[in-house]
Length: 488
Image (cartoon, rainbow, N blue to C red; front, side):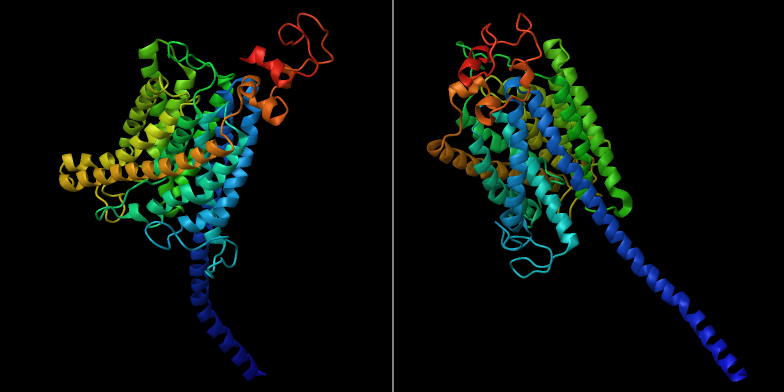
C-alpha cells in the first residue's frame, strides 16, 4: 500500500512539472489561432461595411434622380450586385489573383471552399479575402452608373456588369494588387492602398465611356448649348447616401489592412475621417465663393471626393497630410462638376467625385507617402525629398510611377468599356426611347412607380382639385404616353 502511494505521489509530481510547459504550449497555439481569427473577423466586418456602401450608392443616385426614375435605381443595384458577385466567383477572382503572368491571374476560377478548379486548397481565410475583393469590385461597378441615370436601357446594365466583374475590374486589380505589370514600374510599385485608382478611377472611366455613347438627358441642354439644371427630387435622401458611404469607407480603407496587427487599422480610419471632413468643408467653401449659395449636393460630393482622394494614401500618409489631400479633393470636385457640366450630363458628379478625385488621390501618394509606411521598393513622397528626408530624384520617380498607374488604368478601362458599350449600342441599343425616357424608367421599364401616390389617383381621395391628374384630367391607370406630357 505504501509503495502504491509513493508511486502515485511520484507520478503526480512529474505531471505537475510537465503541466506548465504543456500549458505554455497550449497558450502559444491559442494566442496564434486567436490572432488569426481576430484578423479574419475584422476582414469580414469590413466586408459587411463595404457591402453597405451599395445602400449609399442607391440613396445617392435616387436622391439625384427625378421621382419618375427612383424605382429603377433599386432594381439596378440589386441586379448588378448579384451579377458582379457571380462573375467574380466564376472568373474575376481568378484573373485578379496573384498567379499567372503580368497581365492576368490563372488560378482560382469558380472559387469554392476546399478546392478550386486548379487544385489549390482554399479555406476560410481565402474565402474572407475573396469576398472582400468581390465587394470592392461591386463598389467600382456601382460608380459606373451614376453618369447614366434616367436614360439607359436595363439590358445594358446586365451585360456590362458581367463583363466588368469577370474581366475589366479583375485585370486592373491584378495589375496593382496581384503582382501584375503595375506592381513593378521601373523597379517601383504603384501604391494604391485601398483603390483611388483601382476602384474609383476604374468606375468613373467606365461611366465616361458609357456617357460618351449615351448622350445627355432630354432637356439638359438648351438651344444655345448651355446646361440647364435638372434637380434631383430629394436632397435628404442623397445626403443619407453620402453618410452611408462615409460609414462604409471605414471598411473600405481600414479593412484594407487585412488585420488588427499593431492596431494600424485605427490609424487608417482616422486618416480617412480627416480627409472626408476637409473635403466636405472645402467644397462648401469654394462653391459658396463661386455661387454665393451653400449647395447641399456639392457639399456631399465634397465629402465623397475627400474619401476618394485619401483612399490610395490612407495607409501610406501621416495624419497631417490627410486634411490637405481631402481639402484639395474638395476643391477639385467643385471645379470639375462645374466645368464638365458644360459638355457632359453627369447627374451625380461621378466623373469628378470618383474620377478626378481618384486621379488626385493616386498622385497625392507620390507627394506625401511617408518613409515609415511605404511598400518595399517604393520611395517616399516628393515632400520628403524637398525636406531632405529622402532622395529627391527617387521621390520624383515615385510620383512618375503613380502617374503611369493612372494613365495605364485609364487607357485599359476606357478601351474595354467603350468597346463593350459601342458593341451594345450597335446591336441591342443602350438608350431607351424618347417616349420611355419622358415617361420615366419606373413605369416604362419596371411597370410601377417608385412613388405611386405621386402619379396614380387614390380611390380614397375625392376627385377634384386635390386629385393627382395628368394634363388636368384624373386618370386611373396612366400610360407611358400619357405621362410624357407631365414629366417632360
